[in-house]
Image (cartoon, rainbow, N blue to C red; front, side):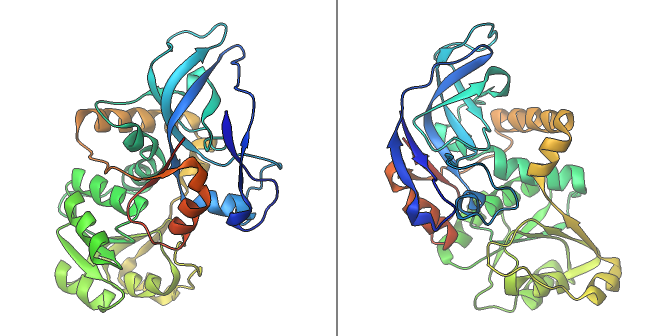
Length: 323
């Protein structure tokens, strides 16, 4: 098997791709031949040692995979060789093969491609968690999505649309804004050129109800100011670079609420509730209620380019590595 190896916490270009013996499943586990591995912003933080959790070295990054079961260990029931599955290994996914607990793999829902399946859970799980567990998005509410052309952004647009909300997509390029419109946004804002606060309030007729912010940096404060009465500001990440310092008087005004969204931590602390959300997500994806876009594909050997392009916000939507 081939696997991306992080031998030290260092710049992304220090990653290597190495050969290892193919895994043999132990009792209760299966081996999945990876057809697509989701690439996320957090993967770049992991390998640079910039994430709050630092795995033991060396390790293989990659937290989302989809592929085919090729081997089954003793005492495994309900999973068969040849089955198309997806899983969340948290680490180890950037490889041609991965050994996983049989209980952790889920059949790929509906007619989703391997790429769609591999890129589904983290982004869509985050937004379903945000919109239905951390707060409730109501039909007809205006939702302003920052970074709307990225993986989290497009998932936010799609899930908000499914829940009946009206979406304003803010993104930096025409291609990204077009992708957000295709995903269900009603209007777009070029937040590199336009006044984000003024345009959002104009479109929403006075103020938006919800802000989805995976970007942070200089866009956070105008997005906060775009909120109307009892508006909710969802803090998801800081892909823009700087962690913003928000003026608390703007939270006080209009009875606004700031809500932290850490789906990953929630899955570890509340596994039962997380499993219920995952089942709901699989049902929605399988029924066609949600429409994840096809991700951009990179060969496994191009892991450095994939992570760098994602970090530099050069690619829209989701990214997968294809072993």
